[in-house]
Image (cartoon, rainbow, N blue to C red):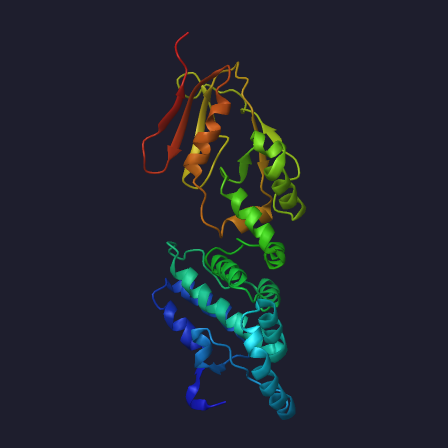
Length: 320
């Protein structure tokens, strides 16, 4: 390797983390040190997304490969399957894995830089977690998986315990169709669950739910939630908050004769953790859409509570 073109991968990547809060910078640096262990010298071109082999194949194989490549390139360039096969043949496994880890490291720093956290809870992941992460991350060759793994690593540094090893394993095994199913369903979340609407009784949404349940991302059955024990804490009515997210929740003001219930499908712990690295659903819109189900006997008022805003009344009973 040309020493003039070699750079310290860890130093080059972590230099972009200088503006992070000190605890996050320390945690992410430790995590990347473990992730990139053994890759202290890599070609600078890798840091721009270009794979270069660290170890050449034998001279004979190289010569043959050159001639074969010339003949095959014209056909392979327009054939994605052939191109994928060529990558598997001509780029050594160790190099592919190293490239994957470097790309995840770069993205993890970017994801950490996006956080609004002050880093109070930040810490380097423990050794067992990190070892499991590395084993699975090194095979993440697609941009989609690399992005997900980078978000997991950054999230675990910023808030330790956010992602279990089971979640990492599930992410590594997600195929494109299941990932798409989950993204569509997660967009309907009202905070750890979705409203059990009629669309989930049959057809495409029912099939989607069952595939996600089989993948361990959603509960296999819907459940019903009822109001808590009646305590007249506000104007003679009890308060029930069936739908909760970080910044939005639904308040149902109910009397002792309330007959309302809420049927919903929960995301599993793994599902919630996977969802946390995706774009946040429109919780307000989802809660508004589901709020009509709570208009039952004994419900006096339904309010949408959003952080930093006045409560929005979605329903108020008329005087009888």
